[in-house]
Length: 279
Image (tube, rainbow, N blue to C red; front, side, top):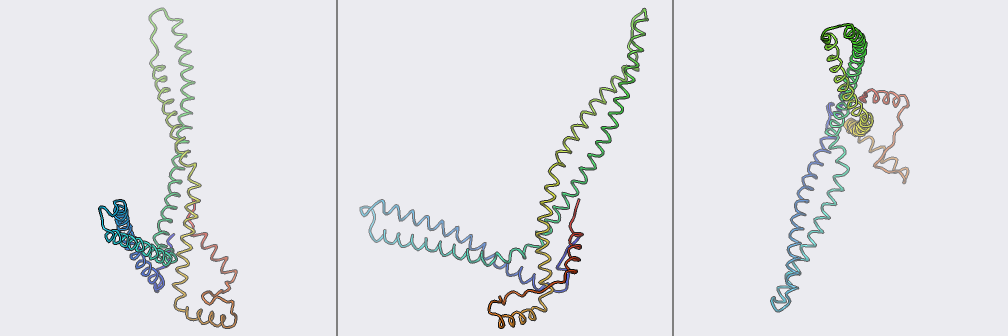
């Protein structure tokens, strides 16, 4: 499933949001770097002020102490100014970040979900293959035990009836060696199965969480697609909302509610359900 709301002709809405987000992000990065420098400068000047105050007038003049105090106060005020600037930038960038990052976040969520589903399918197939091998080896071990029992009985009778030196039959030796190999293989297969079961145990929870994240970022993508298509007729919405505001003081002119037919909602829900990768 490939969901790409920016495949339409118009990308004005997203492009505008992304450009504004990038601009504010650069300014925010610069402001944070400026804050680090300002805090370091303020700390140096506060330390200088403290040292002069500790020495007292014997080692430094009152004029020098006053200058250091003014510089420390100015540096501290500048730190507060830069922090205020950062706060304003963060408040401006917050509503844009969701849309600006939606394509990358959605792609990551989709890749993560599909990866988990593929992993579960692979592990499930491996477990089924291991179960089949366990059944096969178990059946062979049961057959070997039966044959070893019969060969042992036959060898015992030969030993009791024989008068010379007894030699263990080669067939019995071969069967016992094969049984040891079978038991070793069966133990390894059971160990492998336990590992697979443990890996599969937490996958359903991980898949549900990945689906939740996928749905969240898909909502941002679909909302962006909606605004892309609405931009050419946004003036009509603005006119209708302004008219409603003039009629009703309580109406928020920045929002305009429209009614969506139920059959369209049901159709959309079906389409969305079909888009969601499932295991």
